[in-house]
Image (cartoon, rainbow, N blue to C red; front, top):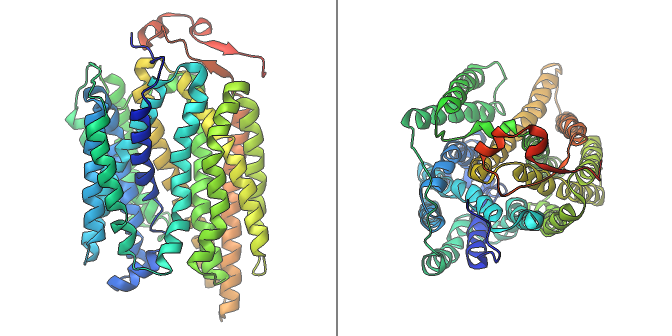
Length: 493
């Protein structure tokens, strides 16, 4: 049985983190630049949203295949392929002179980027012993949350003085350096494991996850029961159901849903999804309020979000160390309580709400979230046998992508649905009335987000600390009594 190395290969970890940071940064890098792109290509607001949603759609389709890649190929080959695709997509996007060309570049970017997150998580889990995984996963969270969070700030600063193409072109030299460094420095070691590319599963995951995410994204512009929304969601749910059934029957599934049989992994998943729905939706709702209601500039919007981004990034490693010391339960309860209350406070915005108020609430909210994600994610991964960590990593990555997409689509739909309903009841609409209704819609969306956070808070009370037993694999685990299969530290209970 493979053991974690006593001395982790920091060359591998540093190079993976560098590549993943830039890839994750691109996820939210264009949010502030969408108005400029819309004007350049003379397209509608609904069309320009595909710059972001096409990225999410492709990521949701590719991520279920990553467990196969990690079992079949070395980390070096996967990394170089992923970064190569990301570089190609970035170059196409940076040189794009037509909107379809930009969308094609973004989809190629997403193909490479979606492979990097599960690869990095799996490398972290395999490189560190259980007692140090909290710190290691804190570094992972630094990349996963800080990079997307700081994206709007950086792009706001750049868009203030430069064309949006610069957002892509500036990344190309860095990507080349990282790609060359990976080729020279990374060891080419393959873990020999049985891996099968099941073509029907690939087709089903592509149709299922693609249709589901397309429908959820469409919900932001259409009614829930509209054909454009309801039919894709229905098709997605049905196909995903049969996809899961097929995976449970396969000897070597592409996405191993058996990991949900491990209770702490399942609870960690539910909590992380609830948190991500509020986190990523907040990144969209706050800019809408600041720019559309209070007429603030993209730079001001980015600067307001900067302190929260810094907290999400730099305190994530600290929360990992605290997890090593205290376990997940106290931290998750504290963090989710802060996140729930502050999200509810953001549901009380008015036209005169001060910049300082929003900044303060957003910072406290970000601090609460740093106490949640790393501990519950690490604890959940510790509950898995080592041979299931690639599957757990892939599912974690998919869950983050899907929950973020669901959160954005659902809360934007709540806001827009409320606005459309109220406007239909008014005969004469002035700009002041329209702004007031928009504020009410944003507040309603934040309150719905607070409900999801509250559900995560309730779930956190059932967490127990789990320390992985490295002598076990999934077969030996299933052969032992549940009470003896994992060491559970109950001091915090």
